[in-house]
Length: 261
Ligand code: KIV
Image (cartoon, rainbow, N blue to C red; front, side, top):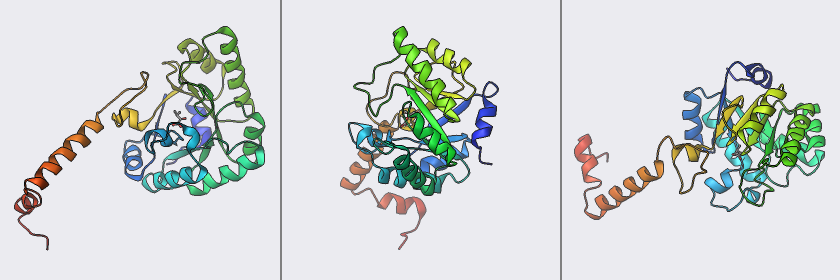
């Protein structure tokens, strides 16, 4: 059964919330089979799948395409769709774009920063919103940890409070000191989902390519549960070698006992 925003709020403090990103149908299907309760179709797709240097290159059309693919693979899982850079500049623009993501298959939308009027407007118009504070990749100059000075920490606490007060049902805390994430988690009534924010959040999100070891760079706060890039290299090498030595496709014919004509 699909988990709704109120269920996520009820999980706070009682059940840690796992969240994975997904961008494609077969990956989403596996994540749903594993009963991960929530998938984020993040604008990280631009960097980890599309080869852009920044998430700022991602468009609303890219997000619609990937959300549609993920929904076809995970029909019963709550899907959060990321509003990409420049698509939430004012309440009206954000509403039009959020509706596009919902129509593509998302159950809620995520937006970066203390964009309070936009969050209030979307929630008022029945679009569930996930906030995002700490490191904000759409506008950051680099990917270093933020919130180390007491001034910056206070700003992030205020932003998290404002995001909750505006009506968001969940907030992502990205790359901030663990103690700060713990403080925010204790203070808020909505679940916090950490990425590079330590163990005291209500849940954790990982970019699926980082978890799979797919790509050639993974942030230090991520974990590689596999090294899929190595497997792809091995398969490509073996296939290429078998075609050149004319082993393939004769070897599948021998294996299956048919020429599949
Ligand atoms: O776009 C994304 O995948 C994200 C995660 C890093 C939280 O925002």
